[in-house]
Structure formats: structure tokens, C-alpha cells
Length: 295
Image (cartoon, rainbow, N blue to C red):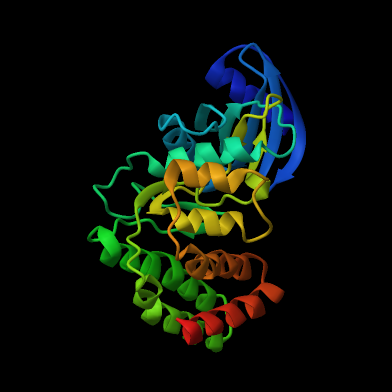
């Protein structure tokens, strides 16, 4: 396979390439490629799954276009002889980013103008892990548009996928109850701002360059309520020290965020239940039942 990847790089980018495997990363095979145009970080999938890599390239390019947060540059995304490839700039990452710089960068991203004319969604579907993420634009902006988008494209889409995978009916009923209660989570007057978000920003999807510059990668972008991003950042831990003051100074944070945080985390727990099963199913059910009771 190393030779196959090297040949694909030579055909697309020119020159000779030395390729070595890095193993699996998430749901793709990964490689380091050294050549005249390198080094590069390369992901590969069978050609039938090429859209997964195309969606990642689209998300990285969208984030880069805001000039707010550092991402690996896309060197190319193509199919060669049955193999789909995504070639990215190789970045030497050194652990966690400086919290204040990450907070300022993410705040700037969320405050930047986003496409869609105030509506929620994205120009194409993409992947949350290996789950297809439906991003058809909401029919309107504002609170009604967000409730439509989050309720249907996020929670109900996960419910339907889980039901098809044989999840307990009780989980589906609990998710439906949360969707019915969505307006009550915004009775404090919070109006979701249509922001471009990374979409899957946990600690495994951000790092830092040697000088502390934050880098984010493996996106699942959409135009969404920025609070959904923050909730994911807190699902499996906490952002680095200094994050919150810098974020608030750049983008602000509504007082009701802590109440809505578990609502937005439910979406990602449901995805983990779909991908990994096990305890995530029970955890999702408990959270959905609690949200429907306390909304």
C-alpha cells in the first residue's frame, strides 16, 4: 500500500515520494509522505468512501477562509485507481494549545460572518466521525430556524439512525420528547447566532504548534449555534486554562449557556451510541429523559 500511495502522490503532485504508514486514525488509514512538496499528512479510504475525505477538505478550507483559526492546509483531495486520498500540510503538534489563544481564535471564528444568510446548515453534508451529518439549510433564520435545524437535522436524524441500528425504543421516545420541548430551552430570550463551527471540537481534535498557536482539525462544520461547539468542547473534559475569559472577551457568552449545554451534548452522546454502542446508549437515554423532565 505504501507504494500505491507514493504513486498516487507522484501522479498528482509530481516528484518522488517516500511514504510510511502511521496506522489508523479514526476511520481512515494515515500516512506521512516526504517529497519535494512535503512533508504531508495523508489520509486514504477506498474510492467508494471518497466523499468522506472531500467533506473534510471542504470543512478545513471553510475554516481556513475565515482567517481566525489555524488548520492544516489542503494540498489535494482526489481519487487514484480506486483509492481516495486527502493530502494535508504536515504540522508538528506539541500537546495542548495555549488556552487564551484557543479561546480568542474560537471566539473570532464564531463571531465571523457565516454563509447562509442567517440560516442554519451547510452547503453539503459531511461526517461526524463516520456518521453522515445532514446539513440541509433551515427554512428560516433566528430561533425558529435553529429549533428546526437542531431538532430535525441533529436530534431526530440521530434518533432515526439509532432506530435503524436497533436501539431501544425508549431512547427514541426520550429524544422525541426533548425535540418537543426544545422551545423551552430558549425561554430566557437567547437568540442563537448563526456561526460557522468546527462541529467536533473535543481535545483529540485540537493541538498546538511549537509556539503555542492553536490548531484544529478533523472538522464536521456547519453553521450552527456557537453554544453547540462549546458544549462539545466540555463533553469529555475542559478546555485549557485561560480559554473562557478570552472566548467571552471575543464572542461573548449568553447567561443560559450552562442550561443548554447538556442539550447540545446529547447530540454527540447519541452519535457515540450509534458508533460505539455500549454504555453510551444508557448514558444517552438518561440524559434525554432528564432533559425532557427539566426543560
